[in-house]
Image (cartoon, rainbow, N blue to C red; front, side):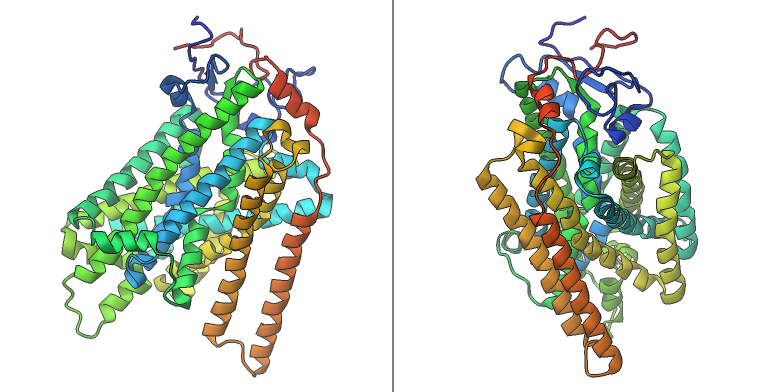
Length: 542
């Protein structure tokens, strides 16, 4: 066995996610403390030693923390992102690249808050929210979160169906039905343990990176000056650009990711203590930054490829109908358009990336659903059944829209789902910010007042952007007018905005009531090895 200055990794085949989903391992409620009653014996997948040795950055220890961030970042490159990126590039060129940059930076900051909460308390976000809010509020937040998870699964369903259409020529309706089989893939993958799942997800991200960076390389990276201008200059050309910009935000910063990441970081075990916990926070944030940097490159590449290709493609399109079809249905028509510029390989590269994106997002969404259900309701459910239920709820609207309105509106449903996620984000973000700013919840790990003020500015900007988007969309649609239907719609929109703002204000103004001071103090002052028996049989050290 190696010394405490070395790193050790222990691999387990199953049981880990069941433990971190409930926030319970050996003490019936507090991860990271040595419990008096043994309810569940489930060791983390990766065990790191020597976290309290020195302050120097260790690549070996950093390698042990690589994994959760790459699982989390799948949500930043799902089919919803592809749709929004392609829409942005086709319609507005490079002008919305700045939205992707700032949304990713904001996402990193928000994900760091999730990591902080998980490491400080040993509980994930849904578990903390369960004890914080009264039953009516708790159930309301659970329902809103479940709707967000279903909304995030809609792009996966449609994206996977369109990928199957591109590869096999399968009609979109049948492709939507076939996507239900992804639960079988999830069943197979979860049997191999989280470390292997993380490696699989990383490989899928690699596929997407190669596909789109290769496409961008074939196009010589676009117009350098215009690309830099699009990254640096924040501007919306019109109301439609604002709508696409908000969909980019909703597609990048997904609310269920806050629940997912705060749970995934608990799969790493180490000797506790404030110094060790803060170093674990540093390693996790660095790993998240690396993962999100990869996703930013992918999202930039997709947008640049779309902008450059639609400008340079040699269309035989005297009426402009083909170009209009690409703009309206980019996921389906972009490969044909790219083929004019990139050759026959474009269709295969695009379809492979889209399929990898859809399947990987399905798996991480299912994990997030587990944590949300078990955290809010204390209900344990088989993960495959959980995946099936979520997928069924997502398939129904996707199938109905595809059958009734056709493929064009199926893609529009992806954009709508991304906008919905942006509206839902504050319902998860506000509790997270309040928890991370409260010493009653995270103790000495609470963020300082200035950082807390900056965080509230981010939350306010998201809420303000959502309200402006709704107003612009209603105004440009012309649906609100003097007719009875227009008046009714106007009243409905006004009532929705009042309820939306009132609900968020209630969350923001409500004082934190629960007190986890003793629990956090045990973690920050303890020298136990994250509550686990380090002499357990079957440990493998490297």
